[in-house]
Image (cartoon, rainbow, N blue to C red):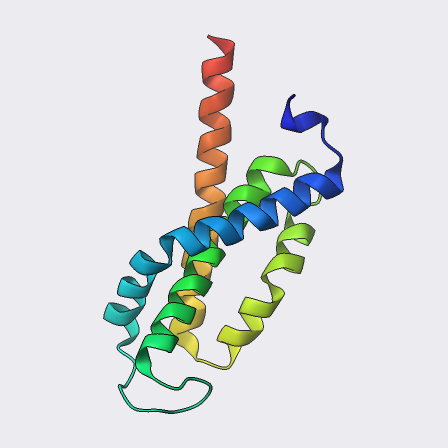
Amino acid sequence: MKISNFHPALKLFCSYILAIVFALIFTFWFSKFYEKVFNPPAFRYGLFYDRNQELIIGGFIFAYILFLPLFVYLFINKKRILFWLIGILIPFLFLLRSGLKELMWFAIFTIAGFLLGWLIKFTHKKLKKS
């Protein structure tokens, strides 16, 4: 059964779930990236009890920010931006309080996710034709 035959709500749900699953799988690597780029302090502050909690949450959010536009672009054909905005609202609000550096990486990961999705679809179409 092709995914293009699924109901749009099911495709949207699948793209959100896949983004969460892939974000959980890749949290470790994105946490390492988060640590190198942002270097959070080791003592307790804000929402987090210790540095490890912030690294895990930050890594998960950045992984989710990359994978959500990727899967939305792959599975949703119409109103991609609207469905992406719905799924990205909570992580965006979380990063909004952080600062300009986090928002810059938010934009970079989002653009990278959309570009990866476009590249996968483009490659699939070219391979399908030949």
